[in-house]
Length: 209
Image 1 (cartoon, one colour):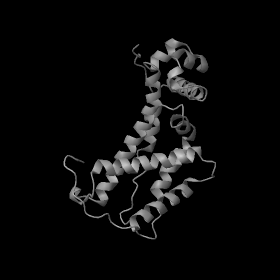
Image 2: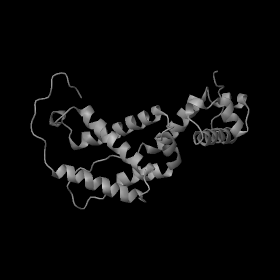
Image 3: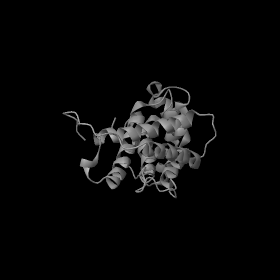
Image 4: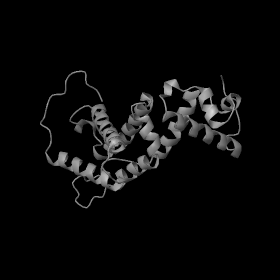
């Protein structure tokens, strides 16, 4: 069903969307997204289905709205690398900002990246982190000829590493602040950097960026 165009800045519309988002997130604590219906969402939000369809076409549209709102908040949260990676005075402020963002939306990420999460959300997060990593990589190594391996592999490695760390943090019983996590991560990155440059190898035919 197509949603009806309404004034998205109207306070009543803003309040209604917030109620629907809260209802969906509450339901995700109880059962997988695949089992949730629009009627479940509206019943939890104490709204009717007609009101739902004024704002969203279906439950996926509602989820996309939540994801995009949170991803917009992530947009300026990270480049990952300093321009001088071995600078001993470097403070990982940008990583702190990224992990502070995760902490702010802790409940959402715990639901979405957990066992009942929605794979497309993890994919969206990984793609977003790859874009952030790409912008910083191009500052560090502006000449693609300097890449020792396909650029797309480098981006996937860093994005996947960050998602793995986020998942560990969400599941861990070890208390850690965004500052702790950023410091540990930077120590690991610095350790990898100081292990040395990989040996020269011929790039296999067919591998692209």
